[in-house]
Every structure is written in structure tokens, then in C-alpha cells.
Image (cartoon, rainbow, N blue to C red; front, side, top):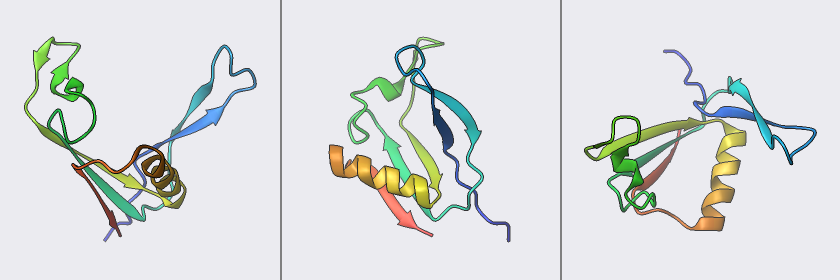
Length: 96
């Protein structure tokens, strides 16, 4: 069985945050330790219905499910964000 890898992106702070606050450092290559599943139905996810609208096509989308794999560092960031904003009804965290 292949090892699952974190699906988050690495964010690199820049020297001058006034102009460009951060840069995309590419995909994270660390092993995943947790899975977050988020139900996008316009309410449970906290997106206020924006998740059900495709801005490029201008079409409404059917409810969908997002899955993210997190390494230990990104799990810590996720847990800090949850502590700040509170838990979402449609979000499920499973440790691998």
C-alpha cells in the first residue's frame, strides 16, 4: 500500500508582506496523518452558499464533498483554525 501524502500547499512568507504577503511553495510532500471531509451544501461548510456557485461558468453546483489529507504540521494549523472559528457541522476529522 502506498503512503498517503498531504494535499495542502506550502506557503512561504515573503520579505515584504505589504506587496505580496506570501508565495506558493508548491505541494506538501509530508506523510498524511489525518483526513478532513467537508460537506459543501451551502450551509454546513460555512461558505454562505458560495460553494454552490461556479464563478467561471456562472452555474449553480450540486452539493459536493471535499476531502483533504493533512500532515502533522497542517493538522496543527487546521486545529488552530478550528479553535479560532469553531467547528463546522459538515466537517469531519479522522486521524489516520
